[in-house]
Length: 330
Image (cartoon, rainbow, N blue to C red; front, top):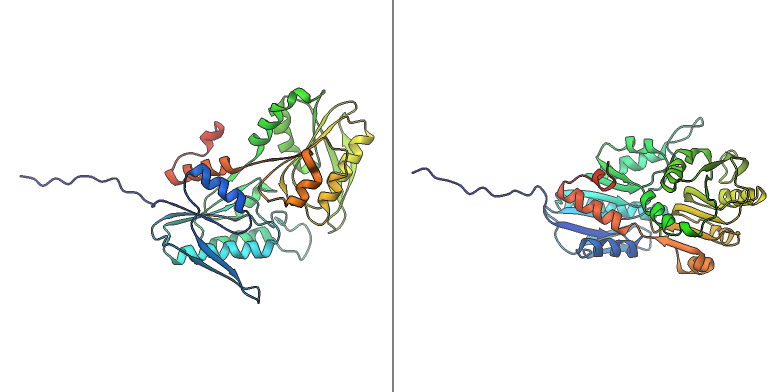
């Protein structure tokens, strides 16, 4: 009589193990809540000499691990913490490690546009791979070619759908709206906003001055006179470009201005400069946490949309081996 064996389903990876760095604890908690799994315990210690030490409280052998760590300020501490945590998981025999980086630092350093300068975005990608990451998840990269710097697979998401859904929900308050991009480099993504809201668009031309952080807004291409403006960009750092853009739009007769940006870096005194602008509403996300003091300065004009459900759903799909593109009918 032949011997038969009962076939068992074989999981390539074990259960989800979700870890949070110290850079975005609130976002990590929201993602964990969406997933219905707890954040795993770990110790992150910074010694007096600024060296970091990380210890996991439980084993991750054979598990599917996700590390949530945005790389906003302090950039180098957050980046090193991410790398050390990835290596810690690798040395504990994790089956797969995914670096979840809502905001990826050094994304603007993506090409040699001058003699004798680095391509630091490529260096960051290399370090993440060498540390032991098998995959990555990030949002709204400054330039699409950065995906080519990684040799590991990844999911580059966009907060576009979250932003557009919210803008549609308040569209009844708009008067003859027009989408305006803060610079020509964001024009293609700006068209997506205009198409998603079924409104026209305009552009602001600006030129960067040498290697300085500031840039000079020069020309408005399009008509904003007597219209509500939805001013869009991927990130706001020092706020200089946005201040100049709002000033130019007001000079050209813009009515109410709604400022929309994904990554609220808000370096130096950017929050003070922005809060002083005649802007009806500031709309951003929690890819980078905004301090309570900064939020209070904006008051009820600040709307922070969470990316937690988006990232959580992508984590589930990555774990189960399902398509992420299906979420957006792609």
